Image (cartoon, rainbow, N blue to C red; front, side, top):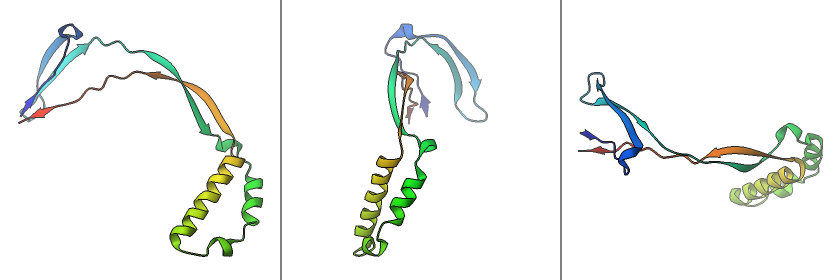
Length: 115
């Protein structure tokens, strides 16, 4: 097996060191610094805010449903009606929480094994 570090730009890595064998394996530990620029940007995150859920309204809505009628038909149809009902309740009675989060462009490092 051959372990490689492939770098497109030779100036991106520096301080490459062979740290010796990795335990009892035939592999060696390689240490290096990578000089990589990342950019940060604000990303809008929208989530349901379950801390502010209107549970009393949801309970009232659920108690007003004719569950015998909802449960008629195939299991697939019943599940679809249940999921639709729950999504509707979520949209109506769970407020949204909007906030910004820093997001860094990440460089993906992959380990390639050959052999």
